[in-house]
Image (cartoon, rainbow, N blue to C red; front, side, top):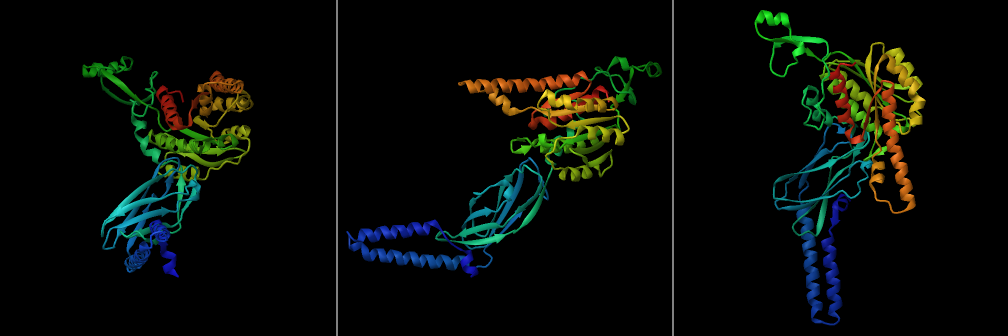
Length: 443
């Protein structure tokens, strides 16, 4: 029974049989072909049996393994490495069908390779998950055929493997050095103009061209008989909280991922940058109630706590309750902090309903509201119009784009900072805003 489960007849064998049928048909007109056709058919069957013998004579003709990360990074290309060893005494043709998780909806996954005698080969492909959770891989199916290519023998490896998908930890490495760089051109971040300096003293050093002459220390200059300046550093140990709106407005999809997952990925990277800047990173999410709370600290285990809590953030499809958010912040965050709020406002009316609570939070804390541009609207506005309906759609799209800009102006009127960004630029723009706030010393 196992033999028949492993045996697969290749298309090449059926093509030969079709050719035999065609020869028999021609034999009606050319009788001399009749006997020759029978000999050809007999030869094919002999080679068929020979192919079965040489493939099934070895129980362990090939060995395969699938190497994956311990956890997948959401929204990133994750490498999956397949290693295949050929123990046969002849070169083989392999067809690999990996049963990848159902979340990818990939139904035609197939790799074909030729492996030399008694050798090893590696294949690599990439998977980009778009939601967090458990991803289950099925069997790694390897179909082996000999140079005769009449049949294939199926081998199964690595059955039923579960890999969790976490918020994008790959971006942590990408943006790691930004926290320490003053020249932020490398990743397209704008250069921050430092307005004044923060008041946390670091050291007295010799003056070099380019230092701010307003920081000259005249007493030290008199003692050393050379120009000396005070050097300051960004204030440390400030509380930074990232607040994620997990209401239904954050389920809007963009490039396969929801806005909620973009916010979660940005929160993870921001936490790393904040801790590297010696500040305290904390987070929580809210909708009908406040969940996934991590108190702002700068312990070595803080990143792991934030990562585990971000993994469990799920939307509840409710209207977000900003009054609950205001009450929770007033009760639990006593020290002045930077509150980075990831949410999405589509209209001014939607903002005005929540503005009293945002103003209340802004009285005690520095608030940055991060919300999203609808990039599909730009596609509509850039499209050439040909019908009345398309003109109408274009005007409405321009109205919504303009309204987003009005939201920024409205927030600024009440001293609330904002970041209006495209989802793919969310992490970069949020980091830049945080570094700008640190450089200006306005927290």
